[in-house]
Image (cartoon, rainbow, N blue to C red):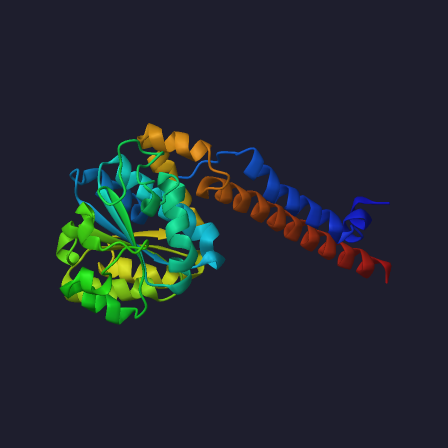
Length: 302
């Protein structure tokens, strides 16, 4: 059998097997492929690096589990970066599934197990960082733009209690955040339109700086806001998350150690994408070359 005949008759299950192995192996043995950073991603890294200790960052979980592979590493990366720089982190959710699952899970992935009602409030990942003083989770609030508008007047009116049911006034960080004037910027981890609301309502009307970490499919529309200056930074999809992760890994030893223990992170996911897309592209090229060669051979026989 010729090479051409072999390619044309290859069982597609071999391709599925190769793609499957390409998706599994980089998760087990990280390839650490180079991830040069783009300007929208560097803007976020440099902004956090330039902030003074004690400044407050508001992180909004505006996505659900379906986009977790892209958004989760962004959320964990931002929280870790802020805490490594001695910044304060206020987390909340304006997307239902973000409040039900992503918010608490990713905060705990970044800082360690939490159970404030039973006294588990000290971060195991960042020794000395305490829930309610250095980071806090307000929980979920319905209403979208209405909630955003009301938060400009009174954060406590929208979130009178934290996720665990404790009045915000009982926490040092809860008392420190009354409205947008008390936060340095908002970081929205978005799937869909909520990230746009932060830009066209909170930034445009109240002047609060906004950065967004979005899914790759949403990146084109978010670049329009970035170019217009309504977002000062943008993490576009898993690629943007991997670029950001690479920078914070190089800049902070404690984050580098935490990333080594992650079962999944943006760098691993980006390696998987690169290898799988390379295999698929290679087989598309091979398939087209084989098809053209087969057509030419048939023409010569007639």
